[in-house]
Length: 249
Image 1 (cartoon, rainbow, N blue to C red):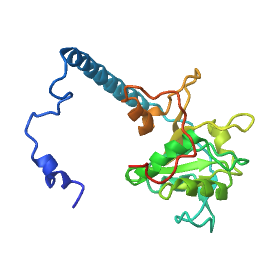
Image 2 (tube, rainbow, N blue to C red):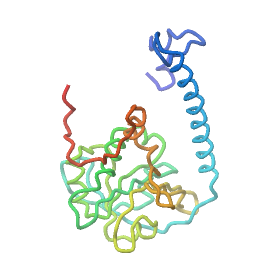
Image 3 (cartoon, rainbow, N blue to C red):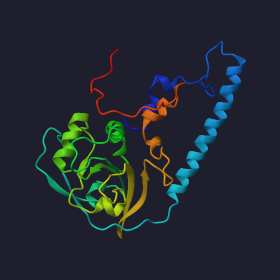
């Protein structure tokens, strides 16, 4: 079934009644609840419109800085093996697309474990890689040696995302996602390629320039689902000790 036909084959869609919408509360909701939820709907729509406006500003950015030639290292598709290793250029990471999204994983060359928050983000990205690959090149990049990157990926089950080591390059420093003493900043970076080579489009770090957080939150379902809870997202941080097996039922 082609992607242009699936919605014509599903009863869950073909049985829709024109103009019918899901209810936002069950029968028995109080008038106080209905008023408050109606106000919340308006606020949610306003937020949606603001997100769309910001996305339009992002798309309207002028051409970014040209990037030089960089060669990274990657391994085989099979995550179980570390080799053979092979060089891969920045342009090759586009994988035939005009755009490239990189997630900059905080895995330092002297560490054996990555940042827990970064790992949470890549857990989600690994799950949606097949969707991302339809529109853009995508890779997870770290400055740690490739065997360390792949070893950490195995502990997380990242069998789908493209894993790249930037060890031995100045790419992270040139891009600005590495600190002056070698610290790493979690970030997404977006790049495009034209006839004149590869250019930077935008970098979206976890923190805003004023030091406030939530700069990447829209890219993770975890925080957004927690925000639906009456208790909110809470004060807890992600943890690398979560089991890979499904939670108890």
